[in-house]
Image (cartoon, rainbow, N blue to C red; front, side, top):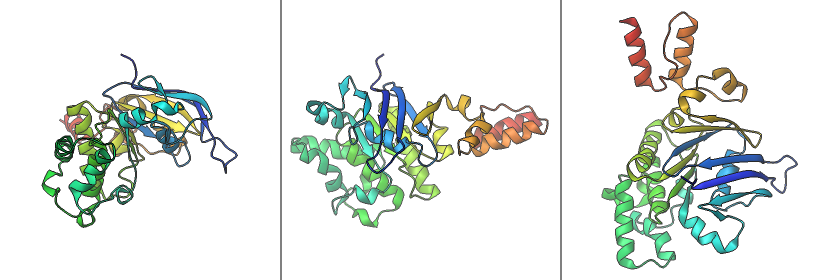
Length: 277
């Protein structure tokens, strides 16, 4: 199966910087997959995200979305319909005073038929669990609810790919759980390709694949169970490991023999319970 997104050896340097933000990054993303992208500040992960729907264009190399080159202007609308972006601060993406009007904003600007807009708005709000709030004022919602409305606004454009650039960075733990659960359901139940830029390890363990960036390059790429046990390497890159992994590694160093692929608290507790039994 052809990748829905192909990143080929791209480079990019911001105008006011001497060091490249991206330095030969290469990545294929399979349709329907859930990919988490990790990296310390300045690693290039957010810059990579902005290349995936042509917010930024590479200085060198190329980005292909369903075979369409992001530097070809005639493909720009099709690329942005295919790849939707959600950013850190939901307040920057909410433009209306009523939730359903906000979700309708993008399809209205695309000239979608009113009856189709109604279907899309209702469907998108149901997908993120916000349909019952469709007549509410966005500014009265919690941070997690606002972010789910922002995601619904992108879903109303019916993208095949959802790119989320640290969407939970401004949320409390409850809000983070709300948003990541909604995003994971979109991938698992709806088949939407998800690319999640995050620095929360507990979010990344829910992905199919973890990509680690450093100095504009992809330096690690694999399943969470393969990446997170490499704790020393991750720490050398300025990253943590999931709390469950850290506990298992400490217990194994003390003489236990626990499976390092038990990445979630539930799996970790079950492994410890089985070992003690």
